[in-house]
Length: 99
Length: 221
Image 1: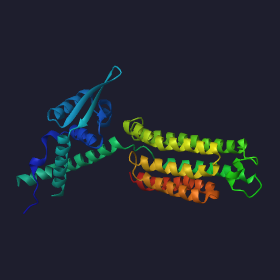
Image 2: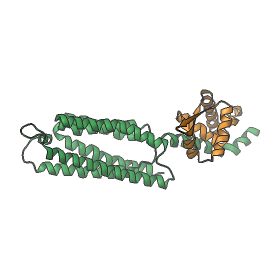
Image 3: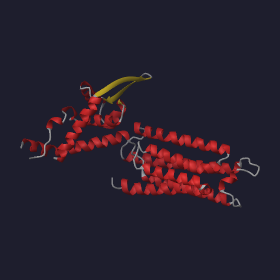
């Protein structure tokens, strides 16, 4: 029998490279602000915002809008659900490669 | 059939995705612009500083342990002796910081990385706490006349700072930290040879570590 792998475990929400990047960064950092994330991923404001809001809608990422003085400072954090789902996705990726 | 076709098409893509994830996790949490060359140069500077101190002590005739000269016969602080050591140590510190900063900026520029990032700031902050407290502690010991303990204490605190820093930069810097702590403790036991242990820790250990890091981790990339 061929090695089993379950396609269903690959999560469509993480298919774009930017979303993979966002989740990777949030797996190892408790909180990351908008500018840092933008620089790490090397994407535009709009691009980052749209991917973040998609992940926020799924409740994988928590978004907090704060102010430092008068400057708005948006901070991202991975939710428990997001971390769990991302781990499942990673395991599925690894299994796919091994099989 | 359908499954294996899917696999063939996607294996490379998936592999790239996994590599991306790994790289992003590392880049976002660790400061990776430090380099082995810094270790080599910092080691050389420290050896030069230790040599200067050794030659200076040589001018004092007598068989006392080196730190005894920090006090005059009447028990007061020997300002010129302590002053020489302070100037020597601070010159080593500033020259080392200068060279290490320059080499770090150079590497960051070459790799298209920024230096003043969240991970850079985190590394600085977490090194500054043990280093700053160690520095103040040494000043206090000097003030109380325990000049002989300064060399061991700088080694121990610097080692602790490196072990702490290993969470925020290359993990293998932890081993250099452990070596420094170990040498510091020995320097505290064999207190008369503090200068020798200091030269071993800040000079030789830095250079060896720098050479190993340069030729094993950096050349391969």
